[in-house]
Image 1 (cartoon, rainbow, N blue to C red):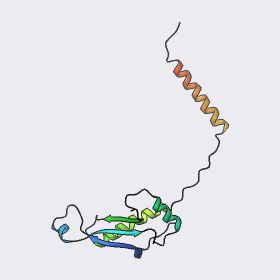
Image 2: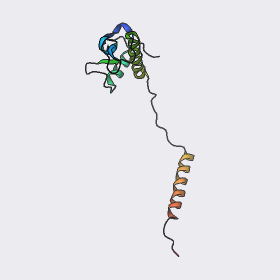
Image 3: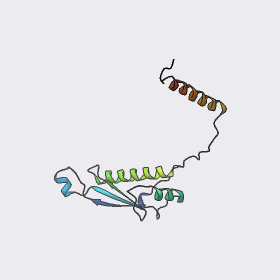
Image 4: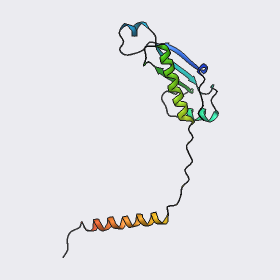
Length: 132
């Protein structure tokens, strides 16, 4: 089960977008900075710990995720894009890796490994100089 982000806990601020777009870029603030405070959120504690432990440049030292969305010319579409990307980060942090338990190799696999080593050793021995 993945943790869901409450959009009320995300702070949005409209900024001017970069890149091409002509006069529209200079006039309209349609890009979005989404700020999400991990510690103050309602996420489960293990998800918070994993998010804070992530090595991501979008997470500040204060534990705030800052995302910039400027793909669309619409402010609402950019907000949805930022929320989607933030949810992807939370989903990635909420996946618990299965614990790997080391096992011993089977006797058959050990025998096959040793057979292949002797076979490759014989092939390499045949590459040497021919002695009469």
